Length: 130
Image (tube, rainbow, N blue to C red; front, side, top):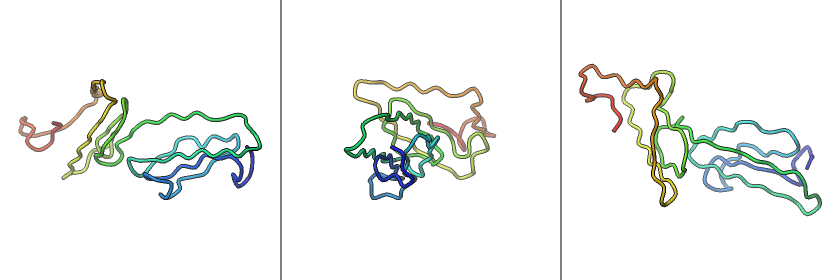
């Protein structure tokens, strides 16, 4: 519902695990907020509608991005990336991701063709994926 302060109907996105987390933005009207990037591995999306108008709505898709380094991801699909990808990853970096799919599902990892984890020894003692 159109209103310059999103007083009646709105979608509010919080950067964290609860509505007490910092607000990324509050959105209403007919202008899509576009792509929103979280700072953590959790977002709260709060949809509020008052009692006066019932129409329209929204749909949103999400993907997991490893702009950070590691974390726990509860999803059947998503994307992880080395830090700074597609640029060079920094030295002395260790990232651990735990990916948890729905019960009964198995996970399949697909790596892009530009996979490059250099190691001068050829034995992956310095840089590797395990």
